[in-house]
Amino acid sequence: MTAARTATPSTARAINDRLALDLLVEHGPLTASQLKILTGLSRPTVADLVERLQDAGLLHLVGEAGARQRGPNARLYGLVAERAHIAGLDIRLDVVEVAVADLAGSTIASATLDVPPDSDPDRAVHDVLALLDATTDAAGADTLHTVAVGVPGLIDPATGVLHAACDGLPGWHARLVAALRERGSVVLENEANLAGIAEQRLGAARGLDTYVLVWLGAGIGACVVLDGRLRRGASGGSGELGFLPVPGTGRLPTCTDCKGGFHSLASGGAIELLATDFGLVGSAEDVVRSAATDATGAGAALLDALAERLVLGVAALTVILDPGCVVLGGETGRAGGTPL
Image (cartoon, rainbow, N blue to C red):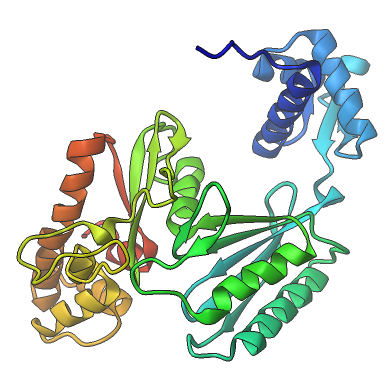
């Protein structure tokens, strides 16, 4: 049996500081009294953290609460949003999106670059880094505190190594991640997990501590959150729904090849092939978006057929995890919207 761990004073201060900063991002400027109420901390503890955050350049005095209040208790403290900047890179199979934000989470500059999967790896890495630098300059940021990178594929939680999933990864993906890590702090995460976290903070899963997001795009994945914690699994493979064996698909997937599994029914390519049965041609995202506006014709029939496929994967997740809420995400999931 392991001994119970207690937080050290420095750990407790860090936790309190993070809590206060999160509240300032959510609510805007607050007085010390409001911070005391929202955090549940004592008045001396709040006074200490306010002083500490001011000394760190993260907090500044922005005014007073109102005409009825004067003095120290009326002082409004706000986040110094420009104190640091972070960048987010959404790396897909053939495109990269970059956004630079301040500490308040406000996007200041963004850009997009098409990178074909067969691009020369060295050229692709050079072009993406140049795009990141240009976007950082456009945001008026001298440096980046952290770069958060969302990618398809598996990320080993122990080593941080990126591995391919169903459809493989272009050769430039791993090289780009390595180049970014040479520059500074990098947070690498699976794209479905990032989408799931966003849904909890801003979207359909807001307020929930147990839910699943099913990612429908070129490939298929899932973000699994149970009891308030993102579950990655022992090797980072939690939620790789494309590998789910499905009888009748012609073959069984292996640990490195998901062909024949759920991927063969609900991946982007599978949906495009299904759409041709109803006389619809185009990318999975386009045909599903078009179908979502067709209440009676071929589009409606396509959505029904697609839903019958999706329910196989969703049912497997629900009977094992009992998430209570399943959110459809990814390009195709968003395209289907409420009708899907």
